[in-house]
Picture 1 (tube, one colour):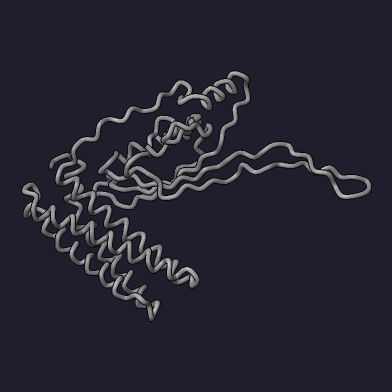
Picture 2: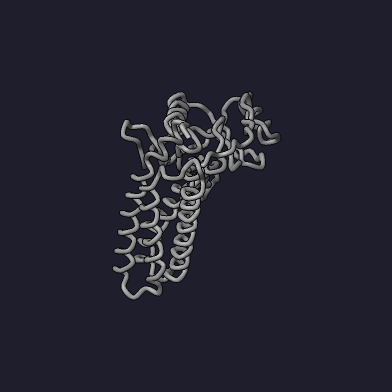
Length: 285
């Protein structure tokens, strides 16, 4: 488990793409003097603010239910203790905003994947009772009247679910390359590091596709069912290889064009994978 926010557990694939911390700054009051420079007096600290970015995917959760849970916690003003995976209590927070982007959905509107950007603000207790409760949380693995969720033993994935996981892993690498190509163009001093990251993402993407093809070819439950997906996966694999073959870069436009082709191939692969994800969501296979 990475961490737990109230009853919401972040673990496994339900992890973070980004975690940023803001606020918690020292606050000073300035007192003017008749002669000389003003004097400063520390008056406290500002509230800490967290921004968490993560993905929800139908293969490991119900995105619509997760989004509803976040919205309800925000609307109710629920105070959510934040605990790290090792049991360390950080502080109490409230949800300020939970905007999300639907990355992939079925024809009937069912959300397959959504990207959430969760904005949290620290909640400081103001009554003696609340202060005592917060102190108790700091000294024990506890969250007031909430209990850490007990994780169920992982259930074996079906062949279909394993194949869907490979599709998602491939898409993650394509998304990473999309961002890295933009950084490569705009950060000349970091190009050597970004070049290696792009190559690594190509290798990881191709590995995921090879694993997917092995399953589609060898798993009896999948043989002959997702032939369209297998063909589009091979196209994506070729696009990964084309990008890797460009280095060292002589023309940045070649890299941008190759990335455009990769993203188009990835969209085609996602379209071909819709029957696969349908079966994962409905538990048909």
